[in-house]
Length: 140
Image 1 (cartoon, rainbow, N blue to C red):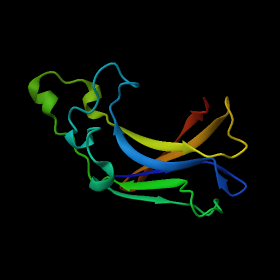
Image 2 (image 1 turned 45 degrees about the vertical axis):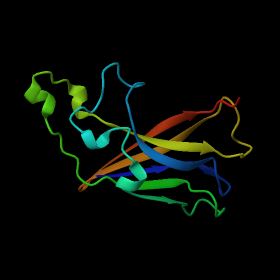
Image 3 (image 1 turned 90 degrees about the horizontal axis):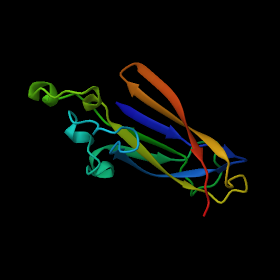
């Protein structure tokens, strides 16, 4: 399984810099724990040292210090099926979250109230699933 994320850019400058990737705990997405059948997808896993992760800048960014994309090779994920064996299976047990951490740039287009699309993709063998997530900006 390969995960990729790409942030938007304007005039050769990334609006966000990708700073990290980690597993999420699901507390914001679900009232019950997620991923109980995937012990390798725990938020405590040191993502950068466990999975091959490449932070890079795409051709749409002219500055050399901004990384506007990340690709992580997560290898194979298989549900262990523990909760089914224990008799307390929930559909959420076979779901895990990956969190992409972004840092907002000082571009003039980044101001409170703006929203931008971050593009995400997951590749499973020959199947590619592409989606987007809206980022809403709030500056203190």
